[in-house]
Length: 100
Image (cartoon, rainbow, N blue to C red; front, side, top):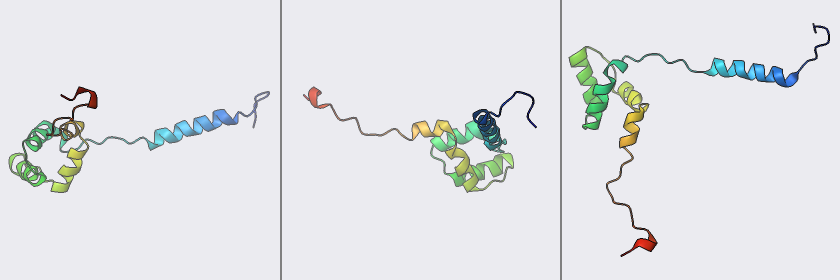
């Protein structure tokens, strides 16, 4: 099976196999039915709407019937909602050298 003077390179073969497996593991993104309403869902969630409120809004306004938990999972994956939830209402404590 070898071709003339070529030798078997185990490291190259392992790298080729790992690259092929990594590509096979890569997740494909399927468009969500909620992608169309992403901006509105984020805005209403920031305004204080619950996931049940958002499900009702989608059903009534857009004839899109999805479960509350589906909306919750969808919103947890969005990066724009993670930024606003880490804000605290307490001011930071002064450093020990700057106390007055």
